[in-house]
Length: 186
Picture (cartoon, helix red, strand yellow):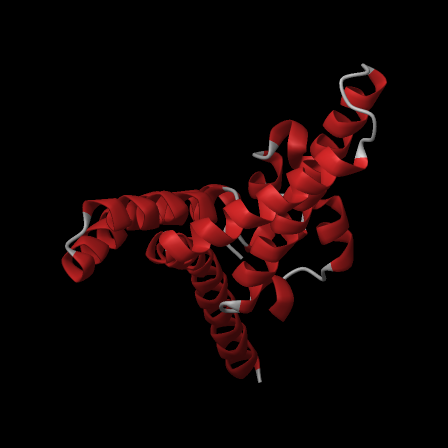
């Protein structure tokens, strides 16, 4: 399996090809920027190796603790973490859950603080409005910027794919090399 440094190099060296390919396909600077940025994120800090103590995991800095449950629940290189499309979608959903948790804490905390400060009588009404507004904003963003969301997801998947493909190639090479040594001895 390649080192974290090798994975980073593959991601960085692949970036011009991804960028050029996306621009040729889409003729859109905005979509190219989104895919390229998501590709970098997918390759450098949102990739399959979040299932172990890795460079990708360490790059989350103070927030890396949010990946501990993910790491504990995933076997390294499992289909759920390294699988095509499934791994990326799983990480997106996992991160979305954390964003929902943080948002809920902020909405509830703000509503309760307003009641404690005496600016409102009941915290439930502003909390409910906060949740409804948040859901509405997400729906609106998905409807109005669907192409951008798809482009970002594709970029994340391509970044993860650059990682997984290099794992598969190196592992396959090692297996072939090992078989050759066994045949030479036998």
